Length: 491
Image (cartoon, rainbow, N blue to C red; front, side, top):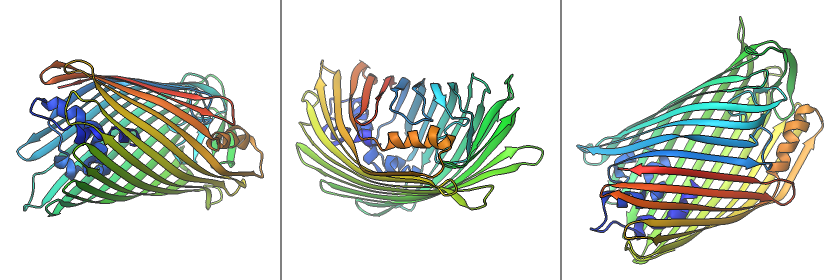
């Protein structure tokens, strides 16, 4: 969500006046919703307090990335296009939100991948050593409902998430996957007093992915069943199937207080993840168990003046995962990460449509990543520090149309990194060591995001968006460029 912070100036410096329409207010407020309790925590009970007007939006989008500065199990060229729609309605004190998206993805020169996402954290994957082109399709929908006040202080809500996907590679042995993801999230908010709110949610999520390899191939393949950063088995394969069954349980608590021109919000949540991988046969064979614990804490504070806004955010995330090896029956593949990040923002401008609004935000971050394979005696430890400066300026082009520019520049520095590998096998040479070189590289980043908002009718707007970002490392060859574009119709 960090990409939204440079838009913090819009909510309070561009409050709707009598001359503004409902959609003018919406377009100013939407980018700032990450500072609201609803979006920050995804507590569905907070939906009615998001202070958004009713709206609908339909979007066509395209984005991509290309370049050599990438991990081995990332595509050299990654393109995605699709359609997205969302809407919000208020009726009789109830609030209803829904979104739907379809995406088509093309990944070129994607190597060592036989699953949808080999970089998900689960070490138990399988792949052949060839690179090829993948085509993937995804459907995703989210529904949320929030109730009116119960007993004067309490609100309840529920959210449902569902996603399905499939993909295949044309090159032999033609790996293929199908995936499903279903989540249910109930939530509550309780008004402690005027300006003070307490919230909580719980979530249960079930994930499933099945993979096939060799069923549509005319040749036998050499398949690697990877079990860590250096542990694997390699066997010839005619055809085979795999399944990954997962479950996640999460819970979170939130607190929000606002008084005069100040606003404070605290969020904390913890998630437990478990995935069982099996080889499908007459008798399913265990292929690994993955467990992960993740925690996150956020603190947001804002101070509004007549012509300025100050904003600060502090965030801490922690993950710890381990893979229980099906051969050694012990935790063999380990990973952990810690990230501390902050956002400091300032904005200045008149609360008028015709006056330019500008702002700046600084986003420092410190991160540590540890990966270990005990059996293969392979490990690396990386500590990085980064800072990104983002700007924001909005121009009035015509009587109603506005242009928004958001430049950014930053640097990621790696002051400490260590790598050990006592077994120099093919997985270490082809995946782990190249990944370490990319993850431990310092790099510069620069980018620009633009929005053009054009009125069509009184209650209809068109938004054109184009963004680009470039990553340039200093210690290794290659670079990486990313871009995104969209056209949205608001009504």
